Image 1 (cartoon, rainbow over the protein chains, first blue to last red):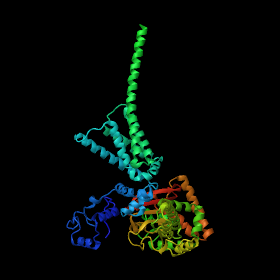
Image 2 (spheres, chains in turn cyan, purple; image 1 turned 90 degrees about the vertical axis):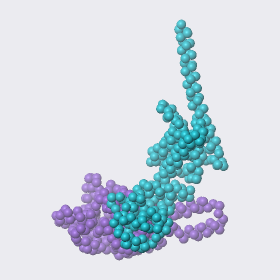
Image 3 (cartoon, rainbow over the protein chains, first blue to last red; image 1 turned 180 degrees about the vertical axis):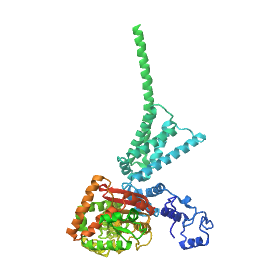
Image 4 (cartoon, chains in turn brown, green; image 1 turned 60 degrees about the vertical axis):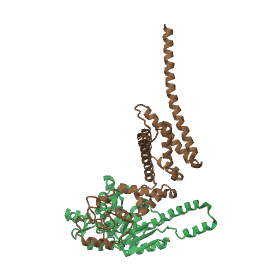
Length: 286
Length: 302
């Protein structure tokens, strides 16, 4: 029994059928389900009497299209997510994507939808990590607002946020240098830069930054520098639990803090010096 | 004669152009024939040219057709374990390239595995060699399907001559009615063959049927050149040089006249893309090679 093709909503027939099959976990023989349909009137009738519950019927008739409608982007998303578990073995390549597609029941040729160097897989992973980080920071912020947790000082907050984000790389740390090099290809720079800047922006937002002057730029530049250098240190860190990396991070954040306080000190000293000079000039002229 | 075809009415020609035989009128080059006549004539064309097919390809395209076919297989980027159906694959060009590609990918895979197995005992390494040695293609297979017995015969001889035996099978079949089950193949290719199919929509539907979910449809075919200067040079070359080459090399002027006429009758890139989408494929796209002289269309069964 073939799936009907409904022109108004071009649902992905084959992948939707596979998802239904995997969701239901048991493959009812097609003959028995089609028999049920021949008994009941087909037009617009929702066959809810089936024992497996609210899942739509195997033949996809009636109005069940909306539940299974999946766009191409969503399917690509699912394939890339499934491909991530094969990355430690195959690297960030089209092979990992092909294996991911296989686990979803699709043919290995589905990897042809993506570029052959695996860029989309890496970008997908980075954006997933950023989303996870945002959710984590939001949860922490809620706890602080509800009064269940202490508000962290800025340096500790930044340190924890960067550490949490870098810890997400640990399962893929062996192949991450390959990923970094692919992200630096001219073709991928716009997207990777976009993801990086939005992540840094997110961290500063949850840190409570509300600056409207030039310090907006300096803060983000400084944090970007801290993040990138710590990531590179992590690549070649072989200490247990990456403690060298976290110590490096602590030092860099402390440096950044002293630098900002030093900068304001320099500014006030400079102002004091200028005022002293002006006073001296006035005294001399008198 | 070209004039007669132009006078046969725009509506009929339009229907015939889309490969949908609404009536019994179809195009055979610039002539108008019935569906059955067209099938017979095309069968005869390829029966006549089968032995000199590869030589003619080289001389007509100055060897560039090899590059086109290489690009097609590179675009496919098959990994070991892929099941390929090459329709209208006649003399096996795509099939042989596929086998070479998969073999080299498999070599690299095995080398990588070997690098990882640095700490194994000699016995384990020996065992893994045994297992992989007899699997140089990684379970990939290609089925070459063609409607013409002569073309398949030439293809089989070529395979024997070049030493291709593993993972290759030859099937006689019609692209409009493939002798295979549903959901069988990972990739379906048709290189320079869909032009000769009488009902293109049926061929596309059959392609959709035999592909697995997630499978890929790839079509390499002569297409429409939009650049006007190049188009004129191309027309000049097609109509003046190619039939003459056909007469000199293969002794068959008429078949090659049919060939260049059929290229003009074939739908252009966007129209073919729409037809592929109508058959149910997603993410349909095309790449022009050589400014549109040849185009690769790709679609996925999702």
